[in-house]
Length: 150
Ligand code: SME
Image 1 (cartoon, rainbow, N blue to C red):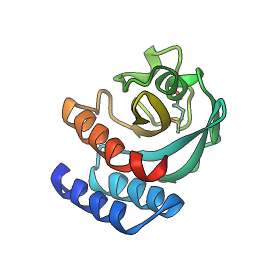
Image 2: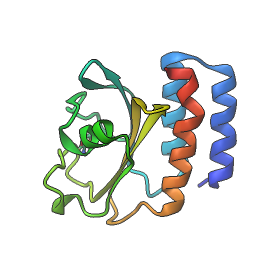
Image 3: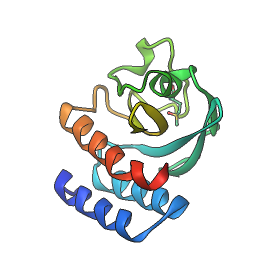
Image 4: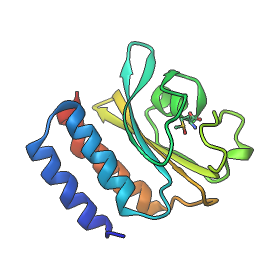
């Protein structure tokens, strides 16, 4: 387990040295490998009126590789530009299931100004896994990569 600061330093190095898909893949790997309460990490990018999964790390692939903006927790965050934290996915009617073990989820938009370019999506097998510290960390990571992925 890394500290949030260590994970940010690794991501800062990746932003300096990598581009495109390689950068997105490295970012999901650092995030996913840093914290045991993260069960699956993905980055979706906005393509027209859909979100397309461009990089992920976790034990299993998801079948939700393309999500219409407006659908699911992911599509809601893309439509509003606001971070979504769902403490108990079984209580959220918007939730699209990817993995049977998921109990909570956070989705953080990657933005340039008001424009949503994509988002970081993390599932956890623990209820209410995502704290304000996770939210701040992931919002900082989204800001760090926004200039390179837009
Ligand atoms: N649960 C998401 C779909 C993506 S999977 O978690 C990988 C949603 O409700 O939009």
